[in-house]
Image (cartoon, rainbow, N blue to C red; front, side, top):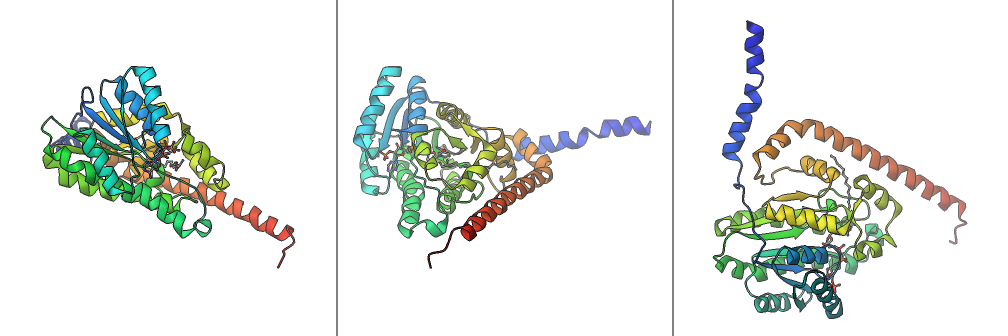
Length: 331
Ligand SMILES: NC(=O)C1=CN([C@@H]2O[C@H](COP(=O)(O)OP(=O)(O)OC[C@H]3O[C@@H](n4cnc5c(N)ncnc54)[C@H](OP(=O)(O)O)[C@@H]3O)[C@@H](O)[C@H]2O)C=CC1
Ligand SMILES: CCCCCCCCCCCCCCCC(=O)[C@@H](N)CO
């Protein structure tokens, strides 16, 4: 008798938790339509941005892309025309130049879905990074993102055509610090603060913020980065594997359309999102439930990853010291 009563009681606890969560998770779930809407993508001439432009165009959106190099923009326009028949609008501007960005956004017309994707990355120990390099990374990735959002926001707020979206392309290095990414990680962690604050400010205007966290992705930018990336950076990044550009773009656009605040791109990214969720908004009560029941165990998994990474760093720095001793010093 007591046993059957207990058996009956067990599911009551998770069920009442789920019920509470379904009532309190905010912001509420939302869908963002793409078809026949204006999608504006920065860094849309290469890599993830270009793949996003292809996808948005093939799903029937009106697409604008912005980047610095006019010739790369022209090439991108041609390739999208060829693949989808859609004529995208191109804007040559540097995101660090607020006036130029503002002019481009104005010319393009009110934006429904803004995808802030431009980014630069060189992996190097901070000691070897010049102050100019650090400033460049922060300026393009973080300050540039502020410029783009600020330029597009008034037009988006004035729009009365249904739910709008502002998506920011971060990186898994925007969820956890990684050797060689001091400047880059800082620029991407900054987007988390921007996104959380912004979501509270624009929710009343039916604008919904998304943060995308890709792992290593086989883009032209990544190919360049790999030429000089420290070995340890590559080892740590390999914990999350690498993805095809088109696959990342698909995950990102699906996440934007589903109105998710956080979009992870692979299984490791999903674990990373659980481990770093902190005070992030959560629209799904199912995911909120999962965050609660995995909170302790996922911390253990995170500590194992740190253990593994610090072991790799230790091993690597020992071989470096060793080679230092073998090389005759010149001073
Ligand atoms: N590839 C990867 O492994 C990963 C990438 N990411 C992020 O994804 C985003 C896209 O990266 P990816 O596709 O690899 O990069 P690419 O280097 O392939 O493309 C970058 C795009 O951004 C544009 N861009 C760069 N600087 C500026 C600027 N100052 N003003 C305007 N446009 C600019 C480039 O055009 P132009 O040079 O002509 O201006 C280009 O269109 C970045 O934010 C990156 O941090 C995140 C995780 C992993
Ligand atoms: C709790 C469980 C944790 C799960 C595993 C976490 C693995 C994290 C690895 C971090 C990889 C960072 C890649 C950065 C890619 C990038 O942005 C550069 N290519 C520049 O573009």
